[in-house]
Image (cartoon, rainbow, N blue to C red; front, side):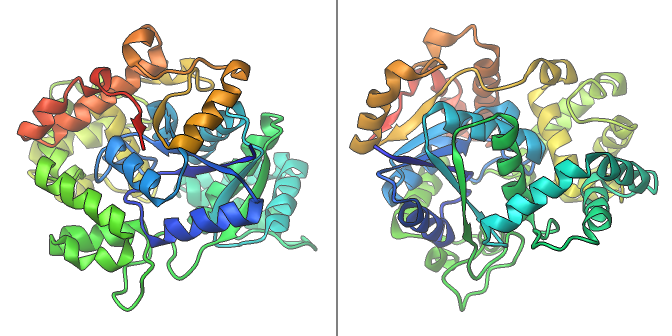
Length: 404
């Protein structure tokens, strides 16, 4: 069986994701679609709208055959490490191809860009350093440095100011650096870009836009035309059962408690907290009664909103620089959900897997990377601050992969 891999968050699974899923299957002529999906905290440094099990069910209902969890340490990492963890897992799962959505839509442009940055690595790094000294954020410094080294290029290159192009570049970079056999493909995004607000005249919107409408209007009916029926059903069930969607606004009281229970020196030990941000974070927590006010107090030109949220995620889960520096690559494969085809595929490659397959976490409780996932899941449910959340603490030990 030929398998194609996708790197996803599905927060939530919407019509654009369905288009990507279907086109990926067609373009790669695959028998099996494998998705590596983030858990309960995401790459933009925020809690997922609904938990990983609910999003896995959305994916399964839409046609993904096998959903694997991307460990917390990679799911909440900067783009290069996020991509490295995901591509390593897809390679470990014997996928022949991985297919990513991009604003560019041309694989050739990504290949040219990788070759250019590899050839001009020293110049690129020097330019990044020079722009950083001007006090701008790291992502902006990367983009400005890229413009410098790409200014005289005679071949098509990728616009690395676009978020999905950036991720696509890092997926390809990860595959090259890992010397992986897996081959890349890309599908052009349609209608909505990553940060676009949802337009009610369209049936495709970004997940960011969908979440904004949902939080503003507080009714699932306001976003139902952007999502497959099965996703709406899962969101309805979650809303009925959990009575709250995951977001920093809801999690803020516990985040604030976590910040203030530590001194500033301790905050500096958590991953991604750097350059005195521990002072700004602690001071803002002392005076801010809601998350938006808190963020307005600490945002700066130096750090993007996303970068700050990743700091906060690591403070909330108490994930330290020391732990981060110990991590290189994923150390296990954890299935969240599968259908009959996914189960047959997993069975067919099981004896050739180089990583342990974890279906029951209790059997692998000594794995430090897995312990981070379990801790993050428990804190996510506590962050919901209701009876459902309380009842779900420890659920990673009770849950087995969903089978459809």
